[in-house]
Image (cartoon, rainbow, N blue to C red; front, side, top):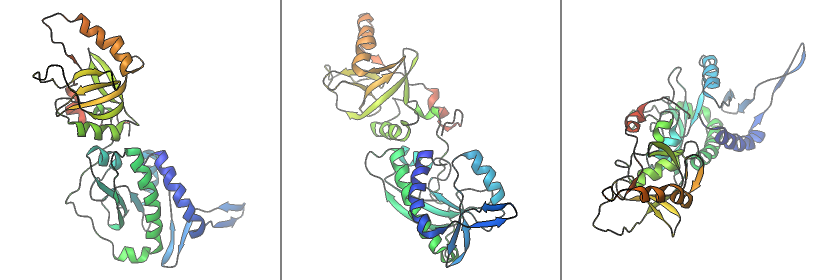
Amino acid sequence: MWTTGIMGAFQKVFSHFQRGFMQTMRRTGSDGMQPRPYSLKSSSGPPWRLLFFGSDHFAVESLKLLTASSGILNVHPSLLPRWRGPAPIFHTILHGDTVTGVTIIQIHPNRFDVGPILNQELHLIPDNCTADELGEALAAKGAYLLIDTLKSLSERLVQKLEQSNAGARYAPKINTSLSWIVWEEQTCDQIDCLYRALSSRIPLRTTWMGKTIKLLDFVGKCHISLSDELRKPVPGSVTYQKESNILAVCCKDGWVGFKAVLLKKRLTATDFYNGYLHQTLQRKMPYQTAEVLFVSRKEGTASHQKRENSVW
């Protein structure tokens, strides 16, 4: 399901059209005036009732009652069959897609996101777009597309296109296991996608001296010059860049930077260096490595496929 904020954007745009395209009908009963659900009056077919929902529980219970009706339309924020499932927007950003879109489909009872396509529109994803920004853009586009679909519904039902399974991918719920960075395996671009997909809901995480540390205010790829050019840094190596006030961390193919971290409390890069990193380096014995490491939580890699601790 879409977030409350995204659904709000959808409803804002949709209600603008609703005033000119829909009529609120009321019926009179023995107990007086009773409200009747919104109905769509279309010259091309019978009234279509619309239901907005924003939570999994509400959706499931509602759809149980609606599956026996003549048809249900779904506004899905991806170019189906790509990214079927509950979190298409997050996976679109997470996997670095450059194009997505909105698809209007008929819902098959007990099988979601696989119904025939009635309408579809492309959307080019801007550089550095976050999941929240993409969600708002697709919500607005989805509202326009739904109105367009309903205006010519009879024709679109005749011309509907069955989905192919070719290129289909599943977009499971986002959970906290995805937020653990594996410095040895993930590239600068992959960490950038991960941050833009998750950070508004779940901060990126790593471990430092056995403690979980949350990485905040990502600044992207960094160009780092080490004093010893012959020494190849180990993934997870941390260096403080005084000029730019960032913590740079070595990953699979380069360095990425963060302006702040959350340990016991939020700390700027400077505060973290002065309070922790600098002291750690001073305590190291001559025979120990001079590097300070953020350590990957290895079990995080395998747990990416799990649904535990789902938050979105």
